[in-house]
Image (cartoon, rainbow, N blue to C red; front, side, top):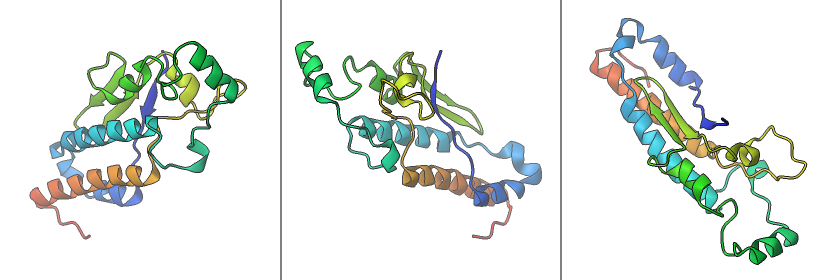
Length: 169
């Protein structure tokens, strides 16, 4: 089973905040942050599928070839967007109710993505590009990724403040 997942790594500032936690580590709960991040991530992926999300140039979806457009039209899929013949892949990334959606949230972690079988062929940035062009849909823009980190950092800061741990900002 292939999985297209978002992994979040904390930046230097967040790691510094975490190092100040000490005895309070068991008291922190980031579920609300990760719920918010999950909602924003699903919205971002929806924009990526709609090709309205500006990301790194190497992640821009190439246009369909003329041959592919003709083939899609012959099969009755000409009006469907790229990677949306059935809509299953997009739903697996953007709808928590999809059977292939991955939205796992714990006290101090969040994992978001899809277990869709064929999504990895299109989304894998390290995969072979002999026949299938890269159509990455799981990597958010750098600015959105930064928003995710700030949500976590602010949540940690607020919880530490509530616990009486002084944080320099």
